[in-house]
Image (cartoon, rainbow, N blue to C red; front, side, top):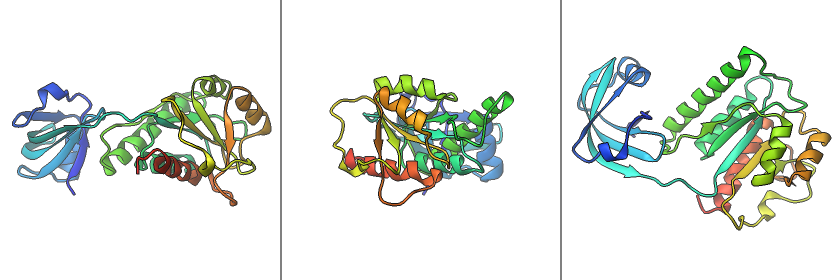
Length: 246
């Protein structure tokens, strides 16, 4: 399998078969100095917005490498989009969830400060945390050869989450819910599906009430209780099958 690199600045009309494109900056430096990429190798380049190029490396320098394009394909964005609202969790369990969900095809990730979140992003930690999740999403997208790069949203409060529930199909993953996720039918419209996963202590009753009043629905995955790091990816796998993505 060829290595996959991301270059957001690539434009489809400039990347036809036979053209030579260049990639500079940190991605080029990593490719040449860490991955030891050399002229003559085959690789893939994507712009994170549906365009993927395959071709042969012409020049390889830490500051910039160039690729002779052999094929250029564009993958349309899927609808409805599936986004994961992941509560901040202790250790690296929230990061594990973000990585796995990205590999499984999530279309967007939103960090959430839940009432029972032990981990907190405050002050400088807000930007640092978002940058960390963005890096995780980027690397997981490259590993899984994704044409579209999921967006990491801003840190969300429960009130902001309730506002989002009004305009989306919001599903609250709750072990005590009476409805199984596998019992749901595909949505009848293209509104985003939003999966909400609480921290290790679960979603607080007050949060469940507020979100349900805004239109969210409680669902469960099965008869066992999953960790916050696995609940979202497991639910995403079910939705992928339901929507015909898999």
